[in-house]
Length: 82
Image (cartoon, rainbow, N blue to C red; front, side):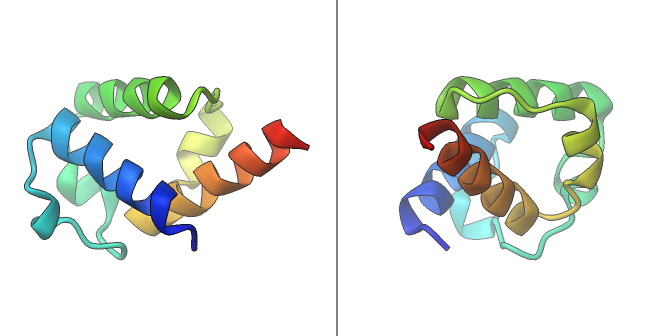
């Protein structure tokens, strides 16, 4: 796992959802930290802006944990640089 990507994901979550990063865990369920659908939409937009990626609705459905976000963003960045 790329530690830079992980740190940036945590930073986006911290800023977007106002959660202290020490309270964010890789295995946290996204719905637990982001129960409102509008918060999730905002969070996805923030990830897209931070990493300059586009996250499809299908990809959003696959994101269950914070770890899933980190892994998927890493894969998108690799694909974009290939």
